[in-house]
Length: 135
Image 1: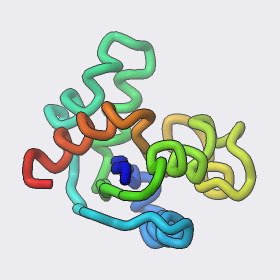
Image 2 (image 1 turned 120 degrees about the horizontal axis):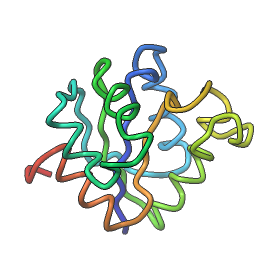
Image 3 (image 1 turned 45 degrees about the vertical axis):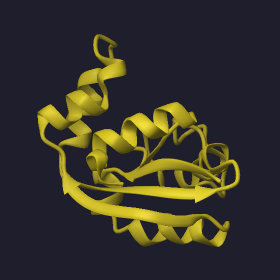
Image 4 (image 1 turned 30 degrees about the vertical axis):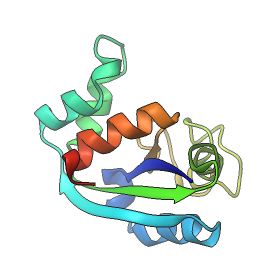
């Protein structure tokens, strides 16, 4: 079984979409392993988005992720990374397919409701950045 990391971003939390996101993943058969709500500091965001440092969109990511509480989750299932990426849809909500989380609820970048790891290696790094070594 593969594990992946997802996070409902502040825009998704503010709009009350935590249950919708969880429900879609559970309905697909994924198993929720861990969940935690917290508010990112600038230091947390710098660690989480370190791979994007120096890119033009970096500061908008930091501004969004520190704007309010987020809900981080670890999901388990066969091909969990790819499955979750399909369920959430394209990064740009205006390009995301109807039926995907971003296609149904996203408005525009960077406020696209949810984050999901793009590979097993990034899932591990993001899990550690969010939860520490406890999970």
